[in-house]
Image (cartoon, rainbow, N blue to C red; front, side):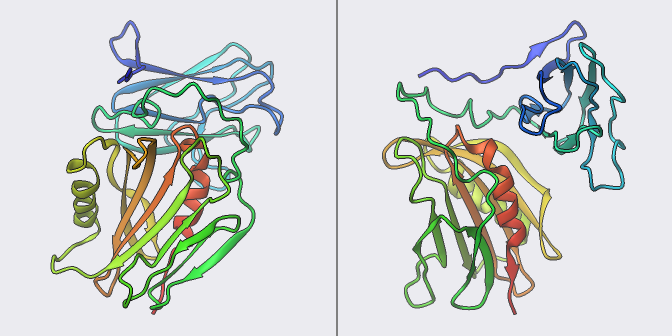
Length: 299
């Protein structure tokens, strides 16, 4: 097995350096945008964007709909062959886009320590090549699920199938839904939700740490990919904490999981888990974010 722990380059200043390309044809909505679209680095890493296109572009922090565009960094106009650099000194997830072509979007995820990314936490790939289209990218049709005990509702992709829907009598998880039509060569994407009471007095952060201990720290083969952060997700007015890890299923296939944890006003503990194949993971972030944003606490 070959595991690459870091692909960082070191520039002459001694700082880790990572490259993002703006490929030729990026100005077309159907073309490639930033490559890679999501880049995971450590604190102190300098990211260098280079315009390989023949059209002007910008690298501007924020999103097209935000009022504080460019507050963190802004390259201004980059002509073909020009580059822009920014050093990320704090942990977090930082979105950016091109002001001239707002459909061009990217994200830099900065961790506090040395964590493998989903690709480097993956085992050495098998020989089989899977070209199956990923139906979990740009999902347009959603199904709403309401918990039988009226504790929460959530949306999931309509082409998925519910494989488990428990209640207080069966003691099963209130929801497990899977992309049952996904590729047989890859880990099928899956959403699971657990809601429970505990003798322990959790808040969102301590619940996430408890989940980390159970799912990563005390589980053989699991690797932390992104550390616990409480700055990315909110459920209504409640701050949620999340982390990302990789592990093995019963057949030895590698998967990645986004775990989101929070405690509601009734002291109910909520855990939302989104599992995906390592080769699909970054592409499914928009679906993950949509699902978490749809989660509603019911009265």
